[in-house]
Image 1 (tube, rainbow, N blue to C red):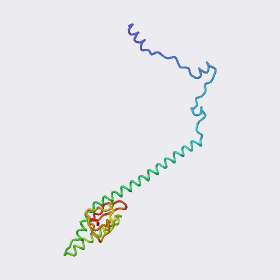
Image 2 (spheres, rainbow, N blue to C red):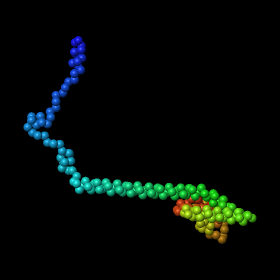
Image 3 (cartoon, rainbow, N blue to C red):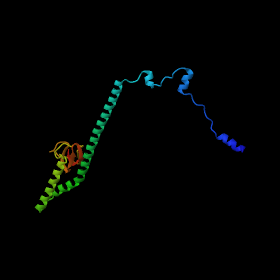
Image 4 (cartoon, rainbow, N blue to C red):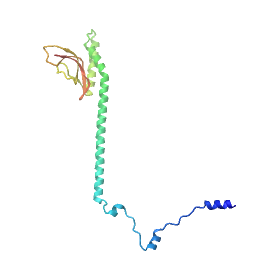
Length: 188
C-alpha cells in the first residue's frame, strides 16, 4: 500500500501561487496602474485624420490606375489575338487563291467554266476585302525586302534599278502585318 500512496502523491500536480492581480498590486503599492496605450499615442506621432484620408485616397488612386492599365492591356491583347487569328485563317486560304489565279490564266474552250472560276475568284477577293486584307502592289514597284521575296534577277534596260519586273505569287497584308510576301523577279 505504501507504493500506492507514493504514486498518488506523485500524481498530484503542484499548484503555482496565484499571480498578483491589479487590485492586489494597487493595495500593496498604493498607486493605480496606468492603462496601456498604443505605442503611436504614447509617442505622440500618430497620423492625423487628414494624413490617413490622404493615404487612403492615394491607395485608391493607385488601385484605380492599376485597374485601368490592366483593362487597356487586356484589350490590346484581345485585339492582337483577333488580328493574329484572322491573319492565320487568311494564310490558310491563300493556296486556294493561288489555284484560282492559275485556273483563270489557263486557256479553255468552255466559257461557262471560265466564267464560274472568275466568279469564285471575285467572291474570294470580296471576302478578303471585307476582312481588311490587301494585296501587296508589286509589279513595277521598287523592290522592298519587307514585302517582296526576290527569287529571280534579270537585266532589263527598260526598267529601273531594283524594280519588280514580274510577280510569280501575289503577296498580302492585313493592316501593317504582312501575311505573305510577294514572290517576284527583280530587274537590274
